[in-house]
Image 1 (cartoon, rainbow, N blue to C red):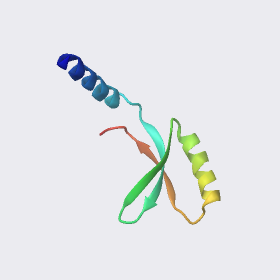
Image 2 (cartoon, one colour):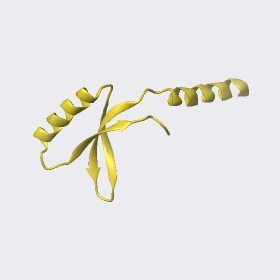
Image 3 (tube, one colour):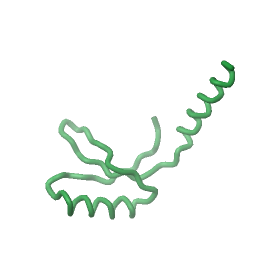
Image 4 (cartoon, rainbow, N blue to C red):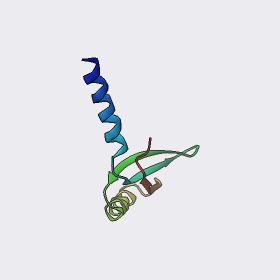
Length: 71
């Protein structure tokens, strides 16, 4: 049973490392922090969502960033 649990944990780590990179819309916060709003498979989709957010809340600053999926 211990072996099965270790194998399952190992699979989760492998899956996390194999997660494809994605484009994210983030909200800028004070002190160089950010909050992830949404993730997308393509930059175009992320930029379209960014345009929507900018129209809905023009006083908030959002950015599109590339998430390498590391960590």
